[in-house]
Length: 395
Image (cartoon, rainbow, N blue to C red; front, side):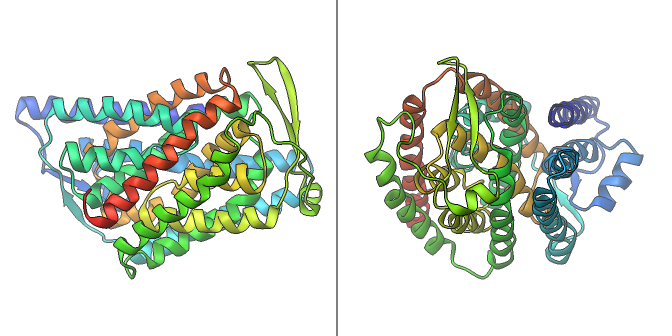
């Protein structure tokens, strides 16, 4: 399902982009607007308008995490795991409420002007996004933290449009890499689904209050919290696997402990899960940050699982990657219906990030947990510095 959703979205996006530039070359391009409501997309598709086709491809990508949750409900039902059928159904209910309830309420219906971007600039945006997707897949970040500075500083895209593309990049990273991680059984689906209750609820709350809070304060708080949170991870930088971890009483009841197959060592690695309540609380904060700032907040998710719940780094990053797409989907509908997702910017970002994330997914299983931490720690510092810089108005 993950691969099908990704491939279908890529095919539709490419078809719309090719049609757009062919019509532009022939001088037969229709009105330079793009739809930001489902009704406008449907109307445009009936006339094969390129912007409607590209937007439809992006919507397929945005819908993939929701379909992932639905399939997970079916999978848990087949296993006769009633607890996780209920847990996953709660996550689905929050997602649908966010998209069709809050999104419709806060949305801004109508057609939005399309910037007159050149083909060359879109190619460079796509190439830059490949690197963002690769790093995002390795570190479980989502790539969005790199997309916003790239788009605003290098390509002079408006901040609102960059945030919309960031949401798309988060879902693209998650969808592109998650198929490989789930196939290799590195992702802990039960941990991910249980914690998604907190992250999706936090994302909805963040999206609701995003227009009421001062962005500067949020950037400062997030940057400082990340720097402080990174200290325990730096202290255990040379630790390959967590030691002396005892299962929290909730962990056994929720069936959270697991085993992953390490391709580098050719061994099955069992692990325990500690401090479930602390991890759950941190995940709500991660979701809140995601909804407020339009990022996947994968850094905070990985920190919660690695530092608080004491999962192996590979499990933390792959499970974070699985989660960030679902968390982002909780606020993606709101951003779309506000008109903040410009298809001609989001499309090359999605294509580039998908390529990079798939490459990253092929790389991670050959790395040790120690090397993965050495990738992740600089990423935390980079994200924290970028948040503080945006708070000071430097970005």
